[in-house]
Amino acid sequence: MISSLLAWLVPAILLFWCVGAYNRLVRLRAEVKSAFANVEVELLRHIQLAQDLPRDDDDLARFTGPRPLWTPVHAATAQLTSSLASARARPLDPQGIAALQSAGQVLGMAWERAEREDAHDLAGSRLPESVSASRAQVVLQVQAAAQQFNAAVNRYNQAIAQFPAVLLAWVFGFKAGGTL
Image 1: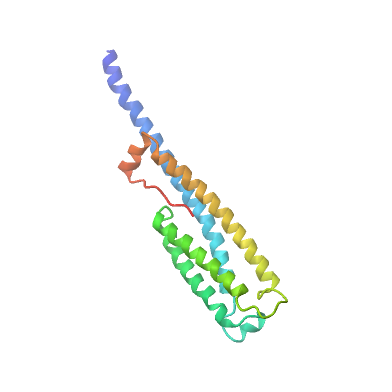
Image 2: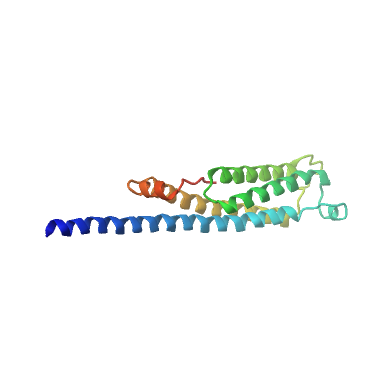
């Protein structure tokens, strides 16, 4: 009698544990996707700010620098947009996140170069104060969203590396994610 009870009790406990562990992994993966959505919103704001820079001669009157200085910013924005679209589909893909991070760094360097290169006028920045302030705010918000995303990814990665959840992760194809 006791042996038949144990024969049913042990598999039942194991089954309930597996369901609970699987649900935890799914919840953590959903948290990562939600955190990535916040990163995406902030990156789209950064992209929009860069796209508002001058593209033609009529629009150049708003800024002090010649148009070729803004061309790298526009090219880096296109690269970031492409990387963001790729990472959006798979926010836990380490290669996609690495490409997104690289594209963000390229855009940051393009902004820096455009703001500072060939500054003959020592009166100030090439950008109006409103654009510089908006960019600084957007950069801070992107960094904050990236920190939240990284924290969510780290919790997820830790969960799929713990024994015995690592067995469920292997069976169901949960893979470690990359951080920004």
